[in-house]
Figure 1 (cartoon, helix red, strand yellow):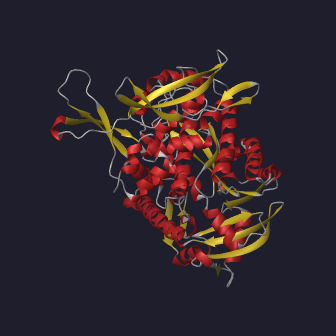
Figure 2 (spheres, one colour):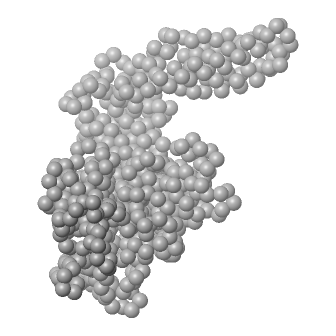
Figure 3 (tube, helix red, strand yellow):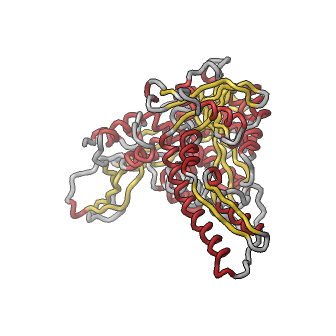
Length: 586
């Protein structure tokens, strides 16, 4: 067995928690594969060892298939890839350092619990009460504790002692480790927010779960907000913030300024570039001149999509509508047209880029067509009611104006639907028509266009457009965290704020491990396709009938693997959990 190495942290002796797998002969015949680690006991102030039996190391004998039976399977590929990524980050140690020393010979620490929940959310999403049974199905282990130690009660006890400051410190440490060990480019970071539905009853006291603008359109549920800062390459979440469901994007980003400053310094130390310049990309929901200045002080350039109703956007759109201003870009963006100008946005000097997107234009046209159909139906109902049999009208002029305003409140309809309300207050009249000339002018000058605003004046127009398109990276992270994704946040049955915080931290940690595993494997497809490929690496548990008294022997049979799966065995060192994988061929 290899030796363990120790080091000192804050006056305490910490042991290197790398797990060592070896084989041991029990008695005179049976050999077993055993994993061992050494951990510091904060209560007794001494190190202790843990061991867990992974299974038999004996080769399966040649037997009659009629005398064998399959008793189950064990996850190897998906769980092993995530365990490997967590070991590269030293996730357990970093989280324990940030949250305080905890755990014991039979009690998991906060870091071990967070990694266990991250594995569960990613490989087999289920409730916390199912966590022990889920871990039992994993052949790779992130620690040498038995699955029964990771109960729902243990999760609640650990969550009660975790604060936002602890989790933020852990995030910064993990982000620095990811940048340093996986060489991720962090020059451009993407920020966005979303929220998740909860099933917490209204009388339940809770600060995070609030009624707000739910992304799922469910107005009857309380939601929890999540803001994520992800890298431009790799979709790696580097920083996140859990906030009340009724909060705004601008408020959340303002609250994250302190963490952004620390993240900037941590990433600079990891990259070895103390004067590194980073650009923060975000959508138009968080625009503020004061926020722009504060981000500049924190060391970030900004790239944002301005709302089209902003005065600077109107100036930029008028400039782009002039003949010859929209020009095709170069390189891979040759199908995109853009116009560029330098203008004042409030008191700030900014570079504005008007980008034309055919996909956005088609989507807006579809939305306008649906909204116009509904508006025409509503206007016909109002006009029919006003002309019905010449009777005394039940609608007043104010009532007609209110219904017309509601009908034309969607999708730029008021720009090209001309409405005339005449008559007296007691007997109003209504006439309307669709001005096709105005509609074509709207499509030519405004629809399908975005106004990008940045203080990166030295960037080319192509770099500005490609940098903003990187915003889909954080949106991809949200898709992975939604229902049906790789590491879904819900369904969450937590009821108190500390449990929601630790649950969200573990979910984001699972997303981080998936992104790092995808980078290591060099998989060119989607992350979901990669996880399906890795999930195919499963060991089949076979039991042999010997006809003799005593416990029947059980063996692990390797699967038939594809080329990608064989690469995964080498990349994530899956053979340490199951050496038979090296001899498996497609």
